[in-house]
Length: 242
Image (cartoon, rainbow, N blue to C red; front, side, top):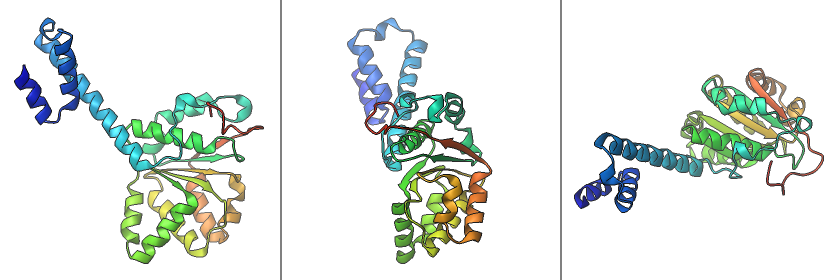
């Protein structure tokens, strides 16, 4: 028995190791058939690997909030319907490379909804990147100055779900507009993008001041997008449900 436990530990089969220990301590090990025991061990290992992958993906994503779809507050008057979230929860929009545009005033819960969708995508095994838009554009600028812009764009292009939060707080500079167009173009029809903004989508032309660039970006985002327009009379920042 000790030899089996040692081997499981050496092979880093953490789920099977913990399950083996629990079965041994509760004396259930001798009550199970080989097939039933093996099934329990394999299930434990699968759950362990899924949980570990989820934790790695969420750490890498660097979400603003630790959120879940179960915490979302649904109300017809708020503009957040269960049907739409249930549809997005299948993550079909990610595999199809479709976008999700979330708009609403400060405190309406845009970032929380975006984070919840991102966490759910991580639970499904997708690679997610979460950025404040201004900080993201600074990262792009630094990559350009350091000569690593191509590898940066390649990394972002391979991120299966990119979340850009607080879009439109300031107008984008000319180079930033070109860089954003490059990012959106690389992802178009291949990987999904969620954008959260205080501004209605119609006002995004004011942020992307170059009309031809704005047309190119919005054409790729809007026509295959899911739209969530949040309405909230009072701030939801301090509420448990968002």
